[in-house]
Image (cartoon, rainbow over all chains, first blue to last red; front, side, top):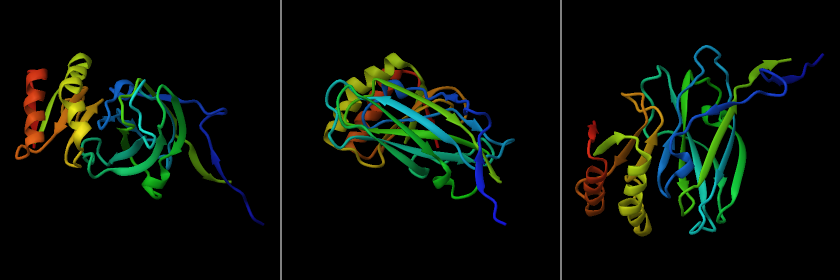
Length: 146
Length: 77
């Protein structure tokens, strides 16, 4: 008899926690903002689901603009990868002036099956103009076999 | 060179307006980064870090601009 493989949320509907990202709400074109640390050392969750919302600049946004998101995992909450050697997670397309873009994304594909005890997210603005707003929320879901 | 300063929104905007935006309008070599850290590696406080090459005209101009705008700065290895 087969059993379904399910993912269990910590609560229903999933409660979200705000991720603090200093500088995201005014991030200059070509610049990066790195979040505070998410402590996953006791939960050891295999995935994190993030809601990312950014608002583009009033002028100068490229028709091919975007915001890239990277993962900076750490084993000891001290040594994190530098910005040239962290792990790509996803891209938010940002291609028009004065527009709010939202994306829901998972970090599991960057982790490839292992649980990061500690991690940060890095946001790289390649939209062509400074952002005018930004916010990130997340939930760490359980992974279970039902 | 990795040069850093305490996070200051006003000084950040000044640096971007006077130096960073002009640099981005011309080129963005991969070794040139401007990063805002919510928890910096050592201080665990918000910091801004410029990673640039001193042996490059653009990098050197940004480093000098960073020092002029932020005043108190420090280096990371």
